[in-house]
Amino acid sequence: MSRTRFTRRLPATIAVAGLALAVAACGGESSSSANGTAPAAADQLKPNADLSQQSLQVTVWADYTPKELPEKVKEKLKVKNMEIGLHATNEEAMAKLTASGDSGVDVAFVSGQYAQALNAQGLLEPIHPELIPNLANLYPEATQLSYDKGNKYSVPYTWGTTGICYRSDLVKAEPKSWNDLLKPPAWADKKITMMTTERWLALPALKSLGYSVNTDKDEEIAKAKELLESAKPHLLAFDDTTFGDRLKSGEAVMVEAWDGWCPTTDPKGNIKFVVPTEGSDLWVDTMVIMKSSKNKEAAHALINYILDPAIHSWAAENINYKVPNKAAMDQVKVPQGSLLNIKPAELLNGESLIDLGQASTKYTRLQADIQAK
Image 1 (tube, rainbow, N blue to C red):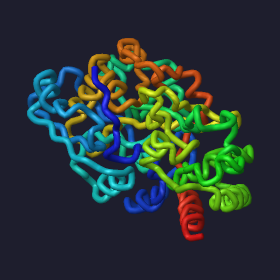
Image 2 (spheres, rainbow, N blue to C red):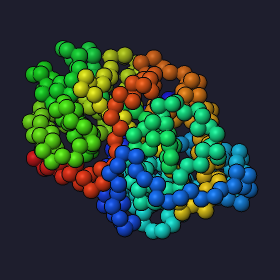
Image 3 (tube, rainbow, N blue to C red):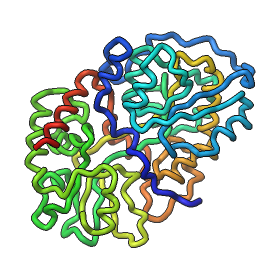
């Protein structure tokens, strides 16, 4: 199957700023616990509900699901109707989902730490596993994600990690450490890019210092800031979207990158990816069902349908992101050089990003300070 580069939006995981403020809009504070809580009890659902009397409203990122999904769902599940609304970032999704008591959304695609925040506010319906038999297709590792162990209120859709993407023919030594970006050798000066979006801006510095990517300690964030400030004069740019093109052209030789956006399948075969020795993150995009949904049986049926291997494999084949669905990945033809063959156990070596509640604003300030200087 043909593969397209997924360039119309930033990955779901880059938008952490404003999470605490978005959650506060619905009248409370987000939980900082890794697993969150489920203050809202599960509704009594009917396994044999007549789905022809239910409709579905979904919010998701553009091009993140097949364009024909609504038609296929209506045909397969016999629902009355299915409509897809789009959000560009997690913040937009949060604003939509928390603006009122009933957003009208049945199923939302959000990143893991945002699912955690929504659940802490009682806005999510607990997952009813008996209505999603295709949960059995998930890798065992996909049930042990730190923000929602056991998939109690979310179902993972895609996952990946962050590392160094580089031109093997242009570097004099292959990168192994985050310090190769933060304290570059002379031959790489002004030929490096790093991400500018908050948690990913901080990640290389935090990991190089031996800190957690989820730290909320002021002194650790301050030390990371010092390291980023010292690195900034040696960067070509902060770049979250075009770093792959910069590598292809030779303008950059090393960049911080999400694995799915590192163009390792370039025909020249000279672009490689490495997770630094200090470690990295594990990001996850998820599917959640809103507590306010009046179509919960259909919502569960939709998630079950997406977990069908023939449907879920679309994400790996078309947006180059791994899916946490073993049955789906088993049928994906992985092209030469692709990072789709990174094993789940390797991904779980990364530290899961979790909701930091009000502490998220510390990263917002960090990003603003680095950009201002």
